[in-house]
Image 1 (tube, rainbow, N blue to C red):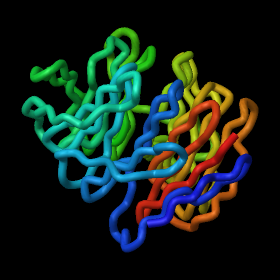
Image 2: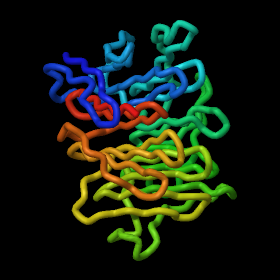
Image 3: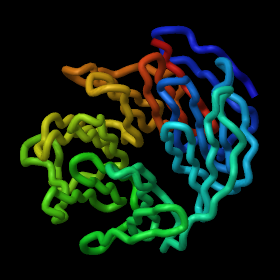
Image 4: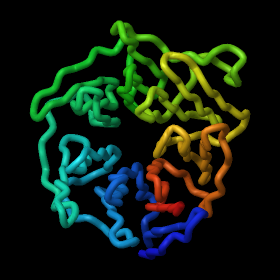
Amino acid sequence: MMRMNAPRHRWWPAYLAQAAHNLDLNAVFGDPNHGFIWAIGDGGTILRLREESWAQERHPLQGALTCGLYAPGRALVIGAKAAITSHIEARGPGPWTETALPPLRGTVSAAAWGADGHLLLGTKAGKLYKVEGSTSWEIPLPGPADAVRAIVDQEILVVVMSDRTIYRDLTGEWHDVQLPPGRGADTPHARFNAAWGDGVGTIWMAGDHGLIASWRHGEWWKISMARGARDNFAVHGSSPGDVWVVGDSGVISKWNGTDWKPSTSRLDVPLYGVWASPDRVVAVGADQSILEFRR
């Protein structure tokens, strides 16, 4: 294992694990106010940033970890059939404690906080659930549903699946997300892999062939798609003018409030997760790679 502090104003490999081949980091999340950041991945891996170094966390879950969420006072990591919570106290995050999930059809593949504060879970069986404690309610999805990849509940509810992306409008009706004709996509049925809401009305989505699109108050606002471009796997931001997208072969793109600009990374590996705060951006990917960008 190698730990390195990231210099300011450029990407830097902050964590490279020895003998970590075939063990990927799948997601990264954190608390922007107190600097607590976690990276999660295959083999039950949880890494936490402590005093500018990444260290392994001990916990009871096994298998691949793909979903991590932060809420004031706690961090939540979700496995295939169970979840673990770390309550954040004055001295920092506490130990991880396990909580069983209610019965769901399929293993969990996506998670988000709903607009009403409830936990939303999507599964590989194409099911969407609202969860409170040990109780769950299925939110019916229209038509044939494939594995859920991402969920955003902000003004409208957006569900990204393997074969299509749908949204529920304010009247409760579901619609397919279709790109407007002539906006850079070969097909109106765009394949997205990730979504993130900025909290003020815009939902950013990233997908195959370099596709990045934003949906603002029910209308398409900004669409970018380059032929032959690398696939995008994750999107996150710290504000409407600071949005980051990562993807295959170490591709990183930044929205600066006006346009998308490429940001060069130092690793040519797939990046599966990104998390941004006002003082740093963290990207994670294959072979337990972690890249940091210090402001």
